Amino acid sequence: MNSLFKRLLNVKGMVVEDVRIVDGPMRPEPVLEVRVRPRAGMLRCSRCGRKRRGYDRGGGVRRWRHQDFGCWRVELVSMMPRVDCPGCGVVVAAVPWAEPGSRFTRDFEAECAWLMTVANQRTVSGFLRVAWRTAGDIARRVAGRLEAAMPSPFDGLTAIGVDETSYRKG
Figure 1 (cartoon, rainbow, N blue to C red):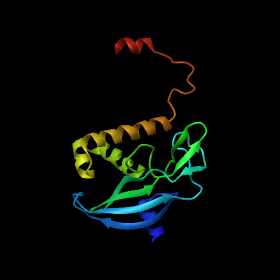
Figure 2: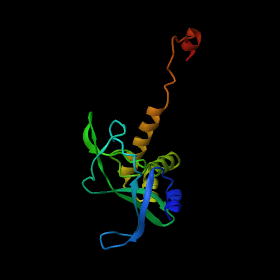
Figure 3: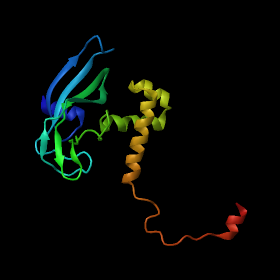
Figure 4: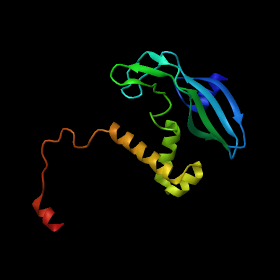
């Protein structure tokens, strides 16, 4: 079952511990809750990204919204260990499925950003069942991540030529 859910979730570097459907009075709809943990030896500082020793088991459970499975809303749930980093101090370990500080998985954020390219923000927020402002924040975060990863078109530029005749014509 572990390998099946790892494939369905499309997340590397994790171990699926348990899968269950959670329904209660505080939830508007049932949620498919997948309990996961990072693989052993994969603890990294969430700020600098270097491999570090574990400090403790963390302060509690964290949840990340993942892409829906059909009509089921999916949440990844994990206890988050902390690491002791000489440069950053004691911080929560990075997880391979989400950015630090985000409540959504990378796949969910990529889906939201792609949908924002073909539909308006209100439609995307209704389709993904997130707040309107959250959809915009996700799109900005993904765009910033892509912009940081792309090389600048002006890298290595040494000179720019301007044709003054064409410039005068507009």
